[in-house]
Image (tube, rainbow, N blue to C red):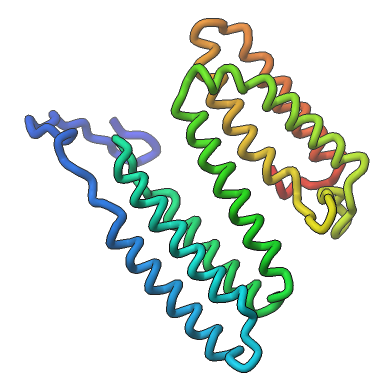
Length: 224
């Protein structure tokens, strides 16, 4: 089949059962990441040796311990693959290094955010793996995410001409980042639901339009 000058060739599948191939584990990439994290910590420790914040070694050792505990526990779960988590841990390490260098006084807050994000990630993946739970969560997630978006649109804090931040106590965050996860969850649930009830696809379409309306009000088009 040739489409726009590109030829696609279909070939007969070999008799080899590709499902029997075991994917390469994440132990080696995780080990390399750990070495990188320790090197980053060593550089920061040498740079700020005389005035080293005690939270810095605790933060790096904490993230290393957490990722290896996660890997060890995950190995006991059938079908566990630590793939998407590795680049996230790498980016988290870079963010931690920037925080240690530029705003060490905010390190405790940063670690709390990491912990909350990790817990939300576990809950999110758990919901995606259980169809019944995913379907039950669809409507509450859509309603809560819309309420959060429109509350931010009218009562949020304006930063760089966009009213897209909320401040709660000593923490500030962009709700639109959380809505991205909610949007994926609601969309995944819709794929299950419309098989049985096709009419419910309109719920997700209306939800999408309302999300775009909130982003337009807060002038946060970068979240799309």
